[in-house]
Length: 259
Image (tube, rainbow, N blue to C red; front, top):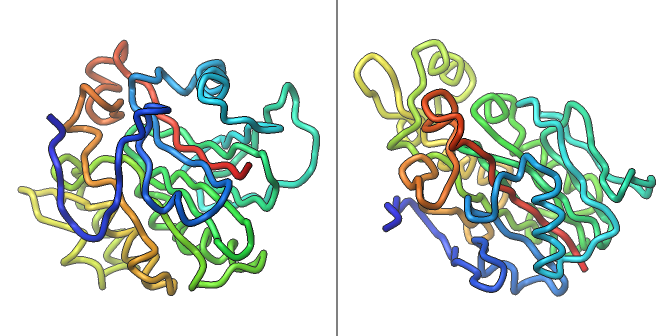
């Protein structure tokens, strides 16, 4: 059984039709499709797994956009350039925003946050891969700013934070904690707990707070309430598996598209 962490507003559910987690926010925007896969889908580091998933679930698109994911705060805006074999791979990037229809934006994660963005006003979508480094570099805020650059407003931006490691399992050392305190001390009480000589980070809560600080209403932010590291039957986890059980390690996919 999934171990649940109750924090704040959430409307997540499991979509049996395409075997992924989603949010009731999907009902707000005609033609919008997004989801977060589980380990049952397979290791989404393999492009063939991603392509097979979209084909099996009738999620059509002119191309799939994949990011190199280097734990940066670099945000890319898609254009009409032709992709190779319907795949556009963007180097040195952890966030992407698009006004194009039938473009499948994808991030791959196994503890970091997969975050979907959309604007009900602009037919604009975005997706980001946010770990602790991307959080420090304010990627959440930069994605929101990027949405605004193409015409979105705070009142029409919605954010969905997908499956990630929770505070119960996310330990960081004193040096990492000190980096956060140098620029985000205001979130110390809500995002960190002491654990011996180390600290435990609530990455979801911290990015939720950063979204609020950027002007997004709390009713426009949804989050996934379970921990990827705790729930080995459902999710891959970098911290749980990468070093101790590399044969079990893989990555899930978060995706968003407009028909």
